Image (cartoon, rainbow, N blue to C red; front, side):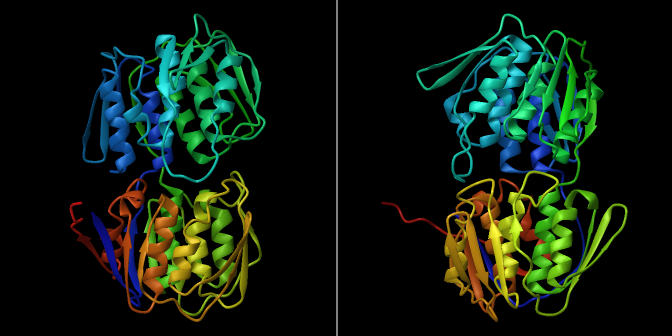
Length: 423
């Protein structure tokens, strides 16, 4: 078992480059089975979730391999329409293969997906939407069995702007006869990135980034070259690390407009931020101050994935900050670990009240999910003394070599292998 050992108190300085977006590359890799040919996808982060997705592609009969930050997929040899329970349980995003496999083969057999335990994330909306397109769906022995002799495009009205459901509809609709329109669609930048990939493959899809997306089904698809957009949550994490530890950092290869909801909050807290076309400069040189209530919302609102990193920053801000979590009910799982470090956090349902303390103190803490794990690293960077963060396998689902990046900016962080005693 590996842990991060972090000595707090080092200010961060320098320049780093952000990785490609985890939440873009996973649905785009699922989409790579649609063309029955070759996809060359660049700026792909080296993450455990990406590795798992490549295993799923190979399980389906595709050739899939990585060369640096480029992933090559040849889906011409795809010969399966089912994904084993073991592979599905490795990550939540595996559900996105349902729409893609259904479009490619006319049937898909998958089990329920795994991933971070953030509370109820039902896939009922996914299943309902695929039924609307003409699929029949049954549950047999713990597996979801989807079949469609013919998919037919129609207007689909989502009750909530679900990212995963929007993506699954987009993928399935590529094989539907006629036009599919998704109303109340998710507007995240990653949806627009999936649209860019599908358009490059030959699908006529428009509207991503707005609440209505239109897909013309039945196009003949071709080989694709595509570059993944920057990861906005990783960008926010690097900014939060700088805010907590103090210092001055430049983050290159970013899309500043993708994180404007968070940038405004960090400015309010006292960070000095300058944006350029593809980079952000952030400086934090004094104790930060509390901010107005933060309410997580679908894009372009404040992202739920940024809530835990910002909570870690606000733990030592002067005054009281309030967080209202509107997406996942278990997003405060890292709060108890932050309190072990001396944070003053009170939770009531979906509301967390963070009363800033002068400092946090290093101790042993455990990550139980991806963004909460990043929050513990951020808190440790600004704490007094040494912290040891276990459970870093959760962090590595979404961050490529986080310890190496932070060390390159001056953080005192080391990866340590801890032997687990045999029972």
